[in-house]
Length: 592
Image (cartoon, rainbow, N blue to C red; front, side, top):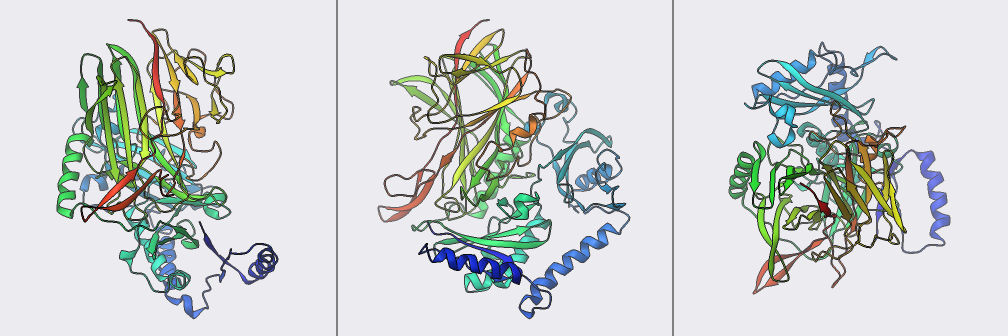
């Protein structure tokens, strides 16, 4: 695959880089790097672009000088406006809005405010939010890279929960998205690269966060998005730095050669979204048969969540959900997307539920072996390039096994993608132990830590890599190695252990995007919940974070994490090649 990468540079840097490029090109053929001059306020070519930026900078200055130096969202929902007003009066929520070093206010913005869904709440908050009175408010501090969260009861006008997270970035608001699109369509270098001036309708994925190595998006933890334009079989990613209100650069990726088709009409989509939200977002469903009992529902941005999972009356899982999808498009340049999946309305999810959760049967050796609960999330124009489709599933076997899995269904925004879903698994029990198989025996985890699975890791005799034990049960954890019959390959997962605290939320509530999208090491997000001095796990309650990975492939006959259109009886249809990832939890013994 050929990449074309453009950074906007000053003249001195440009000259140095061109000299290096001349020497490099002498040895390497077939590779090019095009450079353009940095945006300049005196350059007539950038007049419209700079005027657009200047208007935004003046707006920011006006807000910071006002009596309320926080950018807020004016909503048609009066309760959402009231929720923000309650937050603005609270000293803890506004703890980081003022910069004492410079005696000025930091640039802060409300990025999301919406009524909370049942699946977003823990049991304690559920008891207080029965009448739709609870709203989530999310604020981002651009200077300190801190996201502040609050859950407020708009009826009683009181706080139920508030906290601050460093280096965890919020979801993108409509204002941010629209501003990023405006930068893209007016930037002369983008127009030159495309060969035409794009319209706003040409730009997709504008609300999806990104990272780009060696730029401020990655080094300085700036909040960045990647509005994308598909043209002539390629995708142009414009890397927009929302902290600096400027375009960092752009990159091309190949999106594949087959054309695509669109799906639902807007009317049908509206009906589906209404039904999904009313039936699965604002309330949980309960399932029960002779083997299993559980609650399930769609969260705002953490996928399909299961909770209170019991097997033959024995509690096994407090909860499990899919926090994020990290999608990297280059192992060296480290750029890509962070995708959240969840409800179609009042949600920070980028790729939303396209249908209701589905139940179907599992058979083994021709016999009924259990039930599968699955959920599909899809971009509006999937399977067109730079649109995404994910499937999440839980499999409940009659013998007590549980499979936790998810897959990219393609097609995505390039042919060199690595997909990493982030699972948060909370086993039941306040006193548990975690073990990893080490060559010939089990090694107990004494403190918070993480493990990196490799291709050479040996499994126990029972084919477990890990196991979790409580005083009531013991479960082996078997990673995917292609043995589950769903097309998946090796997980090669990072597994994290973080101690659970009832008084501090570390992912129990709905999480924003966790971590950078494109790191190739253990820094996938869950490490944020492991203390600098790791806490002891002795007889404790802890969370297991599981982050597998899969690389896509559009090679004919070897498609993986991919989708394409084919002709069937003279009619275009889409064919998918999912890449399911995730572990099987296998009971070692059960005691009532």
